[in-house]
Image (tube, rainbow, N blue to C red):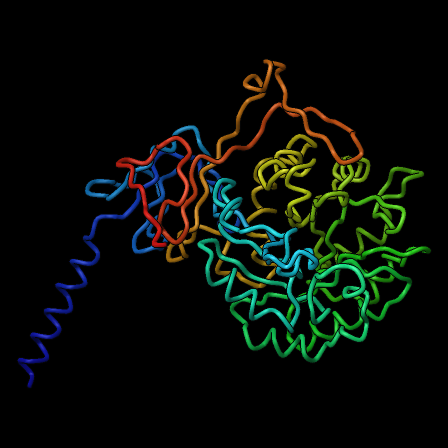
Length: 426
């Protein structure tokens, strides 16, 4: 028996040594790694094995690696996380974002922007989440998470989203608890009226499910008080999206008469309220964002609110929004943090948004393109908002490669060696 145990131990040691000696699947060489969680901001190599980050260090030996990526001159970051998207696409033409035509198939816009994780922001409610899970979440290569709409029938538009009777906190929380891996929070959106009931029911669902709440304040005249929302209704960790919006039916965070941030906004951010960009179609204005950033107020998270309308207007895509914040004076490292580690924390998924050894290998390789390569050799890139206001930026982000779960899913210029073209099963 003793001899048998010795043999088993010896075999285990051999297997262990063989495993350790396996060549890496991918080695990314000579890229500038920015990993805010681990405070890495330097030229380093990244090795990937079995879908995980195996090592982040200088001069990793790539001998025998299945693929080697020359990332010289590029930034290597965690896969980007967009926590405000609309992807419950379908063919019910009268249902807007809930199994309807206004939402988008995730894989069509994510990987080409370095995005590996998205959060659908309230397209489905407890009544139709399982349909959304089956036809979108389970069928996508992108990691798709969800904020459940407090409206049971989701984001169907019109009278459905105004139906307070369908805002069932208990049923919403129960569905969230049934699918803890996919549902990361609760969403309130598009309600029009001077009424706190929708907000209170969303927060109640968040409490019951132990999940954060994202608030899109819809609209009302007179406007509901965002000071009351931040300091009396929401909890630390709850999310205020469209934070740089300036519409007549919503109170803005910046006083338009003085061009200064309202004092209680600083207090709210200190309290722990998450300020999310949620760019969208008409929910971002430079008139709010530029003075706010100049005063030192940065959004906690950068997100797109991407849908069929916003993607073809001023918003465009995640990298365009990130580039706008660079043009407004936000440094690259802060932009990367607000697009990776900070959103991972906001949705309580701390296993995401970083390049720690052992973490799932979601990686983006980004290029910072200089303005001299802009169209017509102007020396700058033009960024505009829905009001027509335009600013100039000397740099713009572009995605060279995206790696999801340790596999190259997007390679713009064929920088992997050798190139492996994956055929996805139909």
